[in-house]
Length: 101
Image (cartoon, one colour):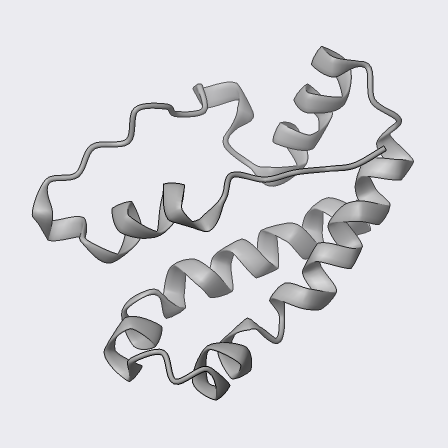
């Protein structure tokens, strides 16, 4: 079993170059906007065990919450780190909400 998310190269350019008119090719419809709703939809649609998915999300959250430090340690330019900070923090919060509920 495994839970996989979109690779960083798929989402990072859209977040970093917001002013460059890069358009996302896929979106969640309105009923699946919140992370909890997304998890429920994925589990139902693909007949996945919700507890396994939540466990995987908790593991991902544990790694993601240290992402900013990892970026700094790997000498990612500070402007890139700052530019994506709000989105990164929101995603980490949504991950936490998903596995806690």
